[in-house]
Amino acid sequence: MGEIMRASRLSGAAGILAVALALAACGGGKDSGTTGAQDDKAEITVWVDADRAGAADAFKKANPGVAVKVVNYDGSANGSNSFRTKVQLFDRAGSGWPDVVFSTQNNDAAWASQKAGGKPAFAAPLSDGLIPKATLDGFTPGSLDPCTVDGKVYCLRNDLAQVVLWYDKSLLTRFGYPVPATWEEYQALGEKVAREHPGYIVGTVGDAWTPEVFFWGSKCQANGVTGPRAVTVRTTTTECRRAAAMLDTLIKNGTTPNVSVFTPEFVQKYAGKVLVMPGPAWYAGAIFNNPQSLNVPKGRLGVGAPPAWSGDTAVTGNVGGGTWFISSHSKNLKAAAKFAEFVTTADDYQVNLAPGYPAFASTADRWVKKQEASGYYATDLQAIIKAGTEIWDGWGSGLFSQEAIWAKTVTPAIADGKSLVDLLPTWETAIKNQAKVDGYTVG
Image (tube, rainbow, N blue to C red; front, side):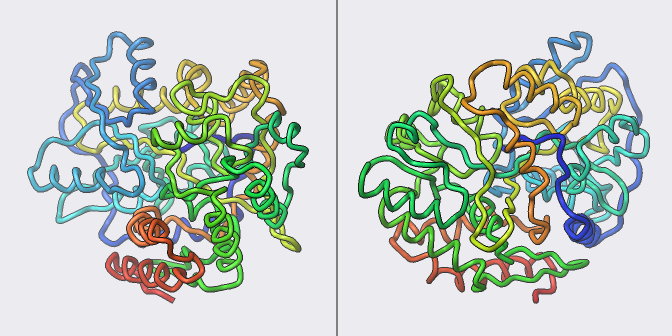
């Protein structure tokens, strides 16, 4: 998943420091080089998820002389950790590593840059000359922070994923509702919709990135990476409780169902009935302007700034964005680097095909212009661009997956009718336990 945002500045200095500390603290020494003899004619194996299959196709079309084998996998979606698990198996076997891997997660550099069991680190350092400095400098400031460990870049960001408020302008106009500017107004809208237009929705809580949309955007300190292998987890604060209480109300009245946006059930029940929806920038192409999903007609989809809590500044979470890694074990680093650079910077994919806002700045500018020139949107896309400057820096990129913890601990409990407010201590305990397993000191 993951995607969207440009001409933006992502995190503040504190956020950058937190990410850097988290990544630097992943134990073991770094492997500063690559392994094995090189063969510029060797076939490269590329792992992609279903949404990035078009990137591989675009590369093969533009580079017919490069032999590429494409393997589909889940992209470590929802914190499945399949990328790391498979690499660990290859490490033990001493062979089998892919040359390039796409991951939906932003915390893989934390482990991929580290030696494991005496084996070289999986990720090749890109900033040692493998990717030109001019290319690295062309990424939106802050976008490569999750890829950077001890000053070296180990992956390339595919797209940005700040949260904005998507809405159906036609429906809002027909029902006489304004676009909510605060979370309090958002909740009031959900309550009104439940009374006046039952069956319509204002969001969902059925995906593993729900905490990144609602709790990160409420400054909930569920993931406060504070130093090398140190994290602060406090989910019962006012900032966490306000988001949970709001969602309890909207879940109960049916306007924010516990259904994943990537299920047939969601499309069957809610196509044409999504009034507003807080969600990442990549929702634009992934669910709204997608014939296989909601397929919102041209001229109806609007995008607004992320709501603010009354008396507080507006902030947003960051829902994925996706990263590309090059294996240090590759026998054709030249081709692997060419592939990674192409899929993150070339218009052939990022402007013409990608559903989300590219992380590469100049490409993102052209993506925005193309989107606006299409006439598809009911508003301009300035809210997406601005939201990239509003990502709250109190949520870090630690080794553990918040999505996996939420999916295992909270999603089933919501399905059982449990209150999110009541679940906050349980969620906190689950985060702390996982953090400790991964070697973090928990505060």
